Structures are given as C-alpha cells and as structure tokens.
Image 1 (tube, rainbow, N blue to C red):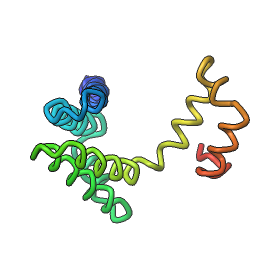
Image 2 (image 1 turned 90 degrees about the horizontal axis):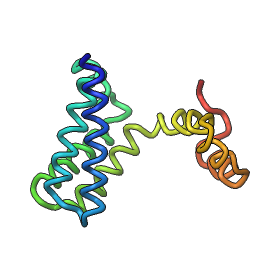
Image 3 (image 1 turned 90 degrees about the vertical axis):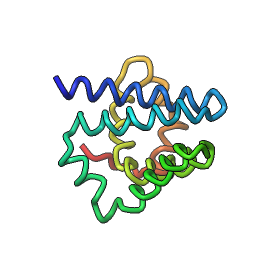
Image 4 (image 1 turned 60 degrees about the vertical axis):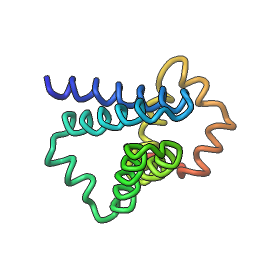
Length: 133
C-alpha cells in the first residue's frame, strides 16, 4: 500500500513542479512539488534505499545540486533553484533515461513516433546504441 501512495506522491510532485514552472516559477508550487517528490520517492523505495541511492559516491554531485536547488526554491529563488535541481536530477537519474526511452518505444502510439529514424539516430548518438535490459 505504501508503494502505491509513494508513486502517487511522486506523480503529484512532478505535476506540481511542472505547474510551478508553467506559472512563471511560482515558488509555492515548486516547494510543494519538491516535498511531494522526495517523500514519494522515499515511500516508493523505502527510506534505507533512498538514503543509499542519494549517498552513492558516484552520485554525490547530483545529490548536492538537487538539495541545493531545493534550498534555493525554499528561500524564494525559484528560477535558479529549478536550474540547479534539473542539473542534479540529470546527474542522479540520467542512467534511467535509456530504459524509459526503450519502454516508451514499445507503446502503441508514442512508440511509432519515437521510432522515427531521425529520433532513433539522435538518441543513439547521445545515449549509445546499446540499451541496458
């Protein structure tokens, strides 16, 4: 039950962050989105695994940037905070993007769009042709 709630909180966190960006970097919505995102990740994979994920030596730069971005949003510098957070998110979760892309290519409508030769070529150029399975 906690995992389902965690996935919901994570989804709402992403929604509120996107809404905050679309509404000209509204600091309140971004702060709520950050809180929901972090609590959702924690409920989804557990507190111990969350701490070990964020404390990995290879991901420490992403963790610091993500935490500093959240701090900037909380002290009402939302534009700079989101930029720093995005850099941290790319460093933390960048390994998952090829898996997400491979999953999306298998969906009926989105998959045909993502299988366009130009997109496949561009993605293979940046991510490498071998996707982890």
